[in-house]
Image 1 (tube, rainbow, N blue to C red):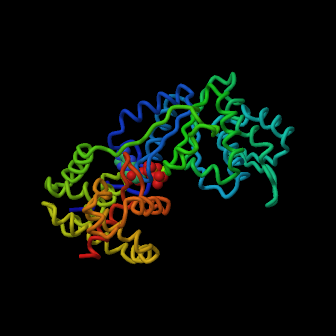
Image 2 (cartoon, rainbow, N blue to C red):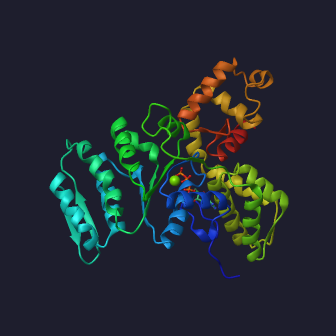
Image 3 (cartoon, helix red, strand yellow):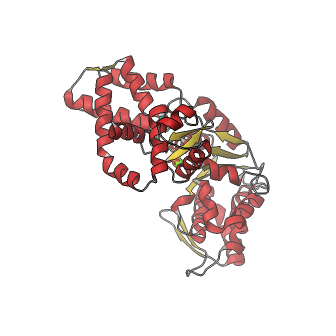
Length: 380
Ligand SMILES: Nc1ncnc2c1ncn2[C@@H]1O[C@H](COP(=O)(O)OP(=O)(O)OP(=O)(O)O)[C@@H](O)[C@H]1O
Ligand SMILES: [Mg+2]
């Protein structure tokens, strides 16, 4: 059989062809952004926020809404973030003829260096140079830009600020204030603020902080098992292979239904089947693939393990063997020598802040679902 491209993709933003489920979330997000709402999209890491936003923006673009997407964590400084924000907004609102008046006005106020490349239509902006440059005073003008450009322009905009929890690293309260004050004026501009650390995002949305009640919140759930089963079965079948029900169950359970990990294990299973040219795949094949993945990252996990305190290790062992719902029970605490419930709670919190655990629907879970596999293997 001639080789075929692996259809399971992870670590990249998923395009609309391979997008599983999320129909309701997608419709809701598209509607809200088209309406000019300010939406807060929250979930733990790797649940599919960026992919959802990418597909939503694509749909909006087809409706002639101008779209802009920035990942806050990509920028090293506040000034750089503001420059990129302005550049991308200007580019989306372009052509140059349309934005040049605004650029001139803006230039009079804040004196940036603006370069426009006629051939590529790229605008490059520098707000000020030197490590000591403080962009705080001009930030409101920059965040006002989408509103200025859409005013009487006959088009709407949708802007995504991804990894939004990182915004506070720039300049704590004042960035949040500056953004909030400007965006609430912009009726023709929808915003989606997506954040990977729900605890930080929730703090940002709490009372007394600028974004409190600024717009609807959307919590992204896991994708249901049945949708994954259809998706995985369909791709294997197209290749003339079948994956037994038990194998599917093993795959989804090992991935803890986290989209990234479902795709990652399915990807490996695909390569494994290609290599062996195996038509019938079952749970033992899935286990063998998971074993390979766990072994491949064991050096990293060994290092991580060594950095943990005995209490943290015991808590993780208990979690890996008995799951989250029983972690505080007397039986589990005794078996794993965890001490009183308050100590367990502290250990769990510290593992959460180290990004080893996350929280989903009130329970702690392993952000990397292969880590508990490694822990079980190690203790066996
Ligand atoms: N709807 C989907 N259909 C299929 N696969 C998906 C879907 N959503 C996410 N995935 C898988 O999960 C991976 C991670 O998705 P994505 O990067 O969108 O998540 P994220 O929540 O933005 O993660 P992070 O918090 O790390 O930025 C994707 O590369 C893809 O493999
Ligand atoms: Mg993301």
